[in-house]
Image 1 (cartoon, rainbow, N blue to C red):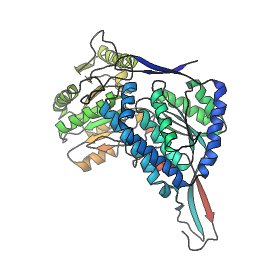
Image 2 (tube, helix red, strand yellow):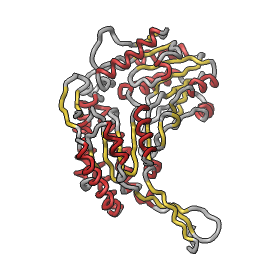
Image 3 (tube, one colour):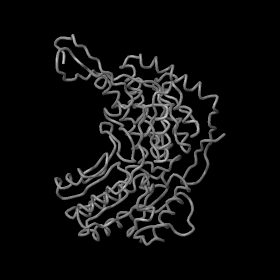
Image 4 (cartoon, rainbow, N blue to C red):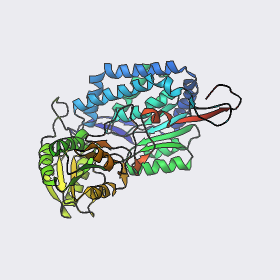
Amino acid sequence: MGVYTTTNPATGEVLATYPEIVDGQIDALIECAASAQVEWAATPAPERAAVLHRAAEIHRERLDDLAALLTREMGKPIAQARAEVKLVASIYEYYADHLAEFLADQPLPISGDGSAVVRSEPIGALLGVMPWNFPYYQVARFAAPNLALGNTVIIKHARNCPQSAMAIEEVLREAGAPDGVYTNAFISSAQVEQVIADDRIAGVSLTGSERAGEAIGAAAGRYLKRSVLELGGSDPFIVLGDADVEQAATVAAAGRLYNAGQACTASKRFIVHEKVYDEFLTHFATAMKSYTPADPTREDTTMGPLSSADAARELDEYVQDAVTRGARVVVGGREEGAEGAFYPPTVLVDVPEEAGAYRDELFGPVAVVHPVADEDAAVRLANDSPYGLAGTVFSGDRDRARAVADRLQTGMVAINSLIRSAPDLPFGGVKRSGVGRELARDGFVAFANQKLVRDPAAEGEA
């Protein structure tokens, strides 16, 4: 039997372990969620909204405690941990506030007599497979709209954040969610397909790696279950020749280093017009060096450790491979023999196509910078990726920036700024960055039965 383990990445100390559930417990867990869903869907919408409102309040009331748990378990700097808790509260609040609007019938313009509307209804019990990098936020993105709609959720969280997983369940239980409406389950990766295969499970959502997405997507297809997959990204950050270079470099460093670079929407590939390349590289190197990995419990810490010592070793392997193949380290790089989960902000240039750092997603504070001759070359390089999650375009001419943004093969793009998550903005990518959308109204209908109700005899309705 495997275990879920809390290890403080800043110190390497193992804080707690929790056993996985055994196969025989899964049936009861699914039955509880499926049975609860029938009653939860029949619960008046204002009562469901009240539970979400209370969940938002509890997150704000326990801001410091919940944030401190993220810092202990994931090494997230305490200020960033508080920001995550506040964002989560806003997500629960958003779906509570907009529930009546989202449940309202959507009239369709039709030819002929009568009326036609689309009505959003819940589809059942769902499975969510969640990652460790934003333990509260990723769950809220999936759970909040579905609990509002009337679905129930079972959450298989990452193996290295069990205490965060239990804290979410405790908050929702205290907020008034009945048993089975929200269930934290310490199941193994092998047991995930067993849950998806069960006829009582109506769908599955994953936020995770490309490899995990392939496995979950295949299982969902095999058993004809609805799915949403939010996977990786290798987001381009384009700096055009007329950009405010110093501002672009400052924003670029922030985009690369938030959460120690462990974000699917982190800027990872910096594509810079050759006219301003040297100037950008100078400012960017200075900005990157201003972030010093430090104790994440300190209020002034801007960057903490990676999630584990293994993650730091894997990242360094990418850097060393790139250097071996001809890349140059402008800033950072790990000292030989260094151990632990901390990794310095690092800038690579001259990375050849055959290096893993050229094409793979680097999940940590390593930036790859490329010069390009013109906008067409910038777009070609930006789109030369299996991923298509998000991107940024910096230019002194916003119309020009938007024209470049329109050519990017991404699900999201920002002009002279970074993509930041908000409850009312849909989130998702294209290509191998995933399938479907979360947040906003899109997240509400992702696991809804959008039922057409057609009444040819109705009068005076549209």
